Length: 411
Length: 228
Ligand SMILES: Nc1ncnc2c1ncn2[C@@H]1O[C@H](COP(=O)(O)OP(=O)(O)O)[C@@H](O)[C@H]1O
Ligand SMILES: [Mg+2]
Image (cartoon, rainbow over all chains, first blue to last red; front, side, top):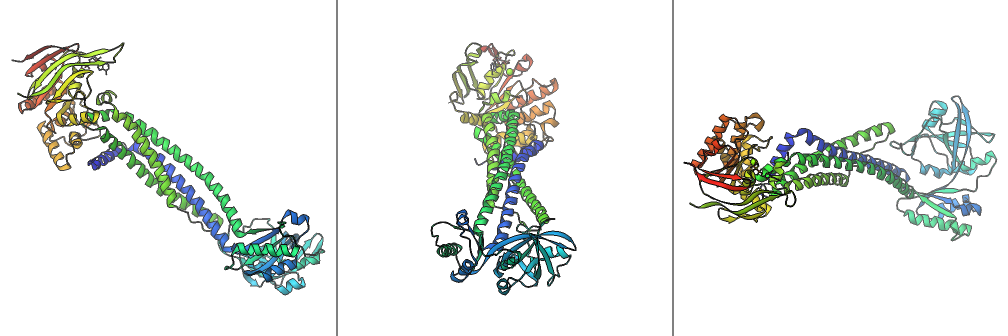
């Protein structure tokens, strides 16, 4: 075994002497490894980008909603419930009912449908926006049921062609009743939030209003399907959620009925991640198949190469090579080819991942960094090297075990 | 003189059973160190089979074989590899050089398998190539050389490690008469330098150039005489 360097040298010589065949052997491995790495890196990168974005805007945000049983029992959440949650639970910074309706408006730019999200001034805590102009509506507006609204700069531009619209009115028609909303604030989207808010042509204009302003349109806004609660950083989301349920159940005297359910942002995040994991698993399967196909290619070429070289094996054995020496030589060849192919594959895979990520970043307006995991690289490399070495060794072993005479007789 | 090769009652049967071929039929043969023996016979008479046995390339069906006093008829694959490497230099009719290696690299092969380091290996291989007159062809590949030159590379490969026995199976079978004579002169020179040479041929003229002639027919030795 002291001759390992000699075997490695022999192997290099043979690889160089058979460039075409060596290249084909490596190609299978290159394709397999690079596709696995690329797919995994893009998948992980996308997941990371989504997570960090969602985390940015949503931690500490808990959504409470009524179960079907509560709806049947008409145990809706009331404004008093919301106030109680806000007042009595430690760690809660704000709470707002969530009410909404839709209507239409006509401006100089045409007719638009409008989504009105109603809540208290605490609604602003949920936003992933900065105030660009004016200010958010206040508790006074909520108390008095003022028809004031906050709009995003992009929607403002769609309605009026400018975002300098504070003080202007939006005439909204809801179920045949029309009322005007005075714009008090214009918001601006934070950067890097493409996954969360995405606009398209024909999408309704969205405004945020005091929920009490809906009274004007002929119904009383005092029972809600859901309430959004904001906890501060120190509070455990789990504890706050339990306290909210407890408060609601006490107030509605329905302990144990499971009328109220919680969806925290963490839950949504987990859901999002499990969806992503399914997609990644699927794509990984496709990539794994390409790895296997690449491996079969390697196997074929190794088989052909050993068959072609049976005579050479015979010559070497007649000169005193032992079975193990022949095996070492072929092992060295297979190892060099697979390792070289692996390195090229990793390199191309990373390059492809970066290319794909920057393409995706450009088209979505959000930065995605390829998520490169050492375990992926290691796994893919070990797998294809394993295939290369195994299928290089297996036929070589068969040939090396032939008696030199038999090997020499084959041509 | 010391016994080099001692074959007793050796048989080799191919395809035992219905279509069996008795390639060697109770052969006895003694060869001493330093001899130059020609084994002659028609095609199919069993010469190559005998050479394969003598060279430990194959194992006999029955009988005993002592090489330099050692019983080698029952050795394992790896031990046979060692014997071939250390005791025997082969010269084949078809040269059996490795196509993508240079002359020098081909000659180095048995030395690599013997575990000789790079420096000494180069030196021994070069010396062997010079001995067969190929000092100007060391870096050439087999495809860049004539048949006679290729066979000289094969001879250099056989002698580079200084094995006690040189086994040549019809070494001139693929060569023209000029190259044939060149090769014969080299073999005679090796014999004169003290090597034991066993030469297999079907050609009487070539056999006459050896010191001793063993004639084989249908797997049996039918004649064994010394040239005068
Ligand atoms: N591997 C083999 N299988 C079956 N028969 C063989 C084999 N090798 C040689 N023979 C037979 O054995 C006999 C002797 O062959 P061989 O030793 O090659 O003769 P020579 O070298 O004198 O021409 C021939 O009849 C040949 O057909
Ligand atoms: Mg023959």
